[in-house]
Image 1 (cartoon, rainbow, N blue to C red):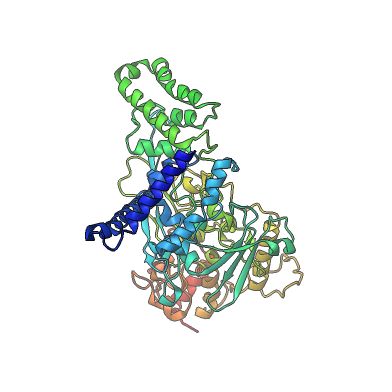
Image 2 (image 1 turned 30 degrees about the horizontal axis):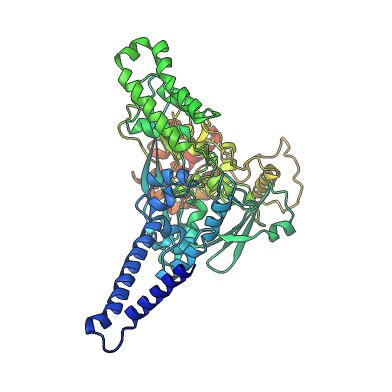
Length: 591
């Protein structure tokens, strides 16, 4: 023990002499302590800088912790693959600020050390989007519409490819600059919501603060919560992450992963039914990874027995398909972390998860009875489904010229009850409600999909719509609110305001009610189909883009009469047509 004490005493003496040499010591000996301290400080500073840089790297974040493989795998193929994890999870800022934020994550290290966490892991705290996303993506920037092509394949033997084209209305900007529309309208304006769950999948209340300071509060018809319980829910403001919650860590479902591999030719499209079989084996729930990979490897035996000739000629393609599918499974199912494509909701879109339909489901209603619109054209154009052999798909663009009925906030809930001949001015309505893509109203992207998260069957919505339609009908007929209408008798004219053909010397005053009733849905000043407006005498006589349609004194030569006789979709009755003929032959007087 004495020897140990003597040893440490000797060290203390030596250190004291080294760092505090006598004043009579040579200059180099007096400088040496400072030089050694300087070198040690430099080494510590350099090592600390490298350690800070490494612990901020995606490699450290993704590989050091055994809970991170799912997030790291998705990150590496995401749009943010070249953005460091800490730029979003810690945020930009002065280095001292970032150090203090990082120190706050010690609780994660503690949870890891003592295993006080549970699988699957969900992010509980994130930096505000305005401190992260908006450092690169400026919300006031307005983005033009952009074309999107989503490539898919059928489950037939040819794995037939088809595409869904749509124009994405990203938008953005502010209303004071004449912009402020499209998808990014949500982040440039004050929109708040209250959700009942930590993942924000059920949103019963939405509050919108308008530019003039007024507010609209929309409440879901299907909520079971009382107003007091709704008010007690925490309110959040919509930002980038409200929708782009999995932009860097998204795990594709089997259908999308296989379609992506086929479109990239990682899977050979010539393999019969490869799309169907690939989705089948990837969608199965397996007890172990070994069982899953064995099932995927079994595809070789399937093709060897079911398609022996093809297998003999294309064994390499099938082997490569098996390798690709095993890789897809490894990137989409993480058994240890209890994560697959069904674990974390993806709020972009509205097919696999509620997404947009958390609010835009047609059943969030305000006090006036208006809904948050369930309307495709708000965020993108009507999808166009294009099969093989089509060279130039036609993509309809929104021009803003729409009938008044289309601006009803419940239009999607009502449109299937509103189809009539006037629709054909803009759309082909043949096979309406079908899904064979033979017309505008037979769109498989709309009618060929079960929209599980739309709220058109919400309790009370049908009654509300019936009341609104009856009120609109009463208003158009001049019936006071709440009044009871008497049923029409046989002697009453069912259509008021349209004069009889027996009118002698008819004028525009006599035919104007007829034009209003039959024509203005398409030929009003708002819509002006073909440039023709039949709202006033002067506009009617002016005609449309191809010239006058009314030739005074010559009904038979007037394009208006010729078009009616050729079979116009908004046809006059024989008596109505005769009235118009009499008016034109009478010189088409105004009054």
